[in-house]
Length: 180
Image 1 (cartoon, rainbow, N blue to C red):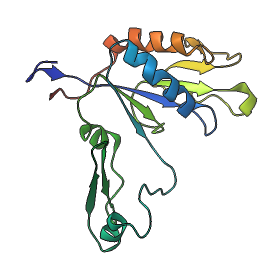
Image 2: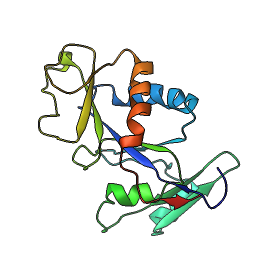
Image 3: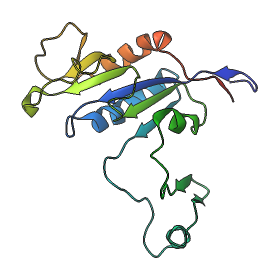
Image 4: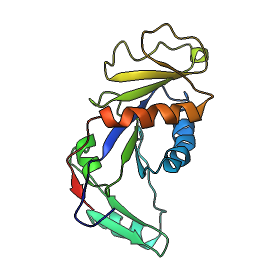
């Protein structure tokens, strides 16, 4: 993409109960969406505390000493860790704004966020579908029968789900355009 062009990032949620296969679906979708020429980023919400750092390492020691942010950098990757301390949890919009420009942000979790979503639902879970309570669900990816008026996607046909997403993209609202 040429410098100074605007890329409006599209956002699509993948929602479902824990253990429904959201992460597995996203993992399979990323390379297929990339084959369609899309640059894909992911935001995953963790419900429990997590740490990407190791106790005793220099960066961990810096955070423990009270640094608000610590950045780790290597020739292969970098990561920025921010301690919220007493600050409230970041909302999804703020998190998206921290990403580098891309074509599509897949969001795992954030069920209540007002973004378009594909629900991952397995009848074997014994849990009800989410979409009657979450109006932003556009389709249901399932490995069984689901009584709904929404489009049904075969959870075992990830290529078809990727095509559905590619066809859906033009109609998805984009985030505020950002320069490359």
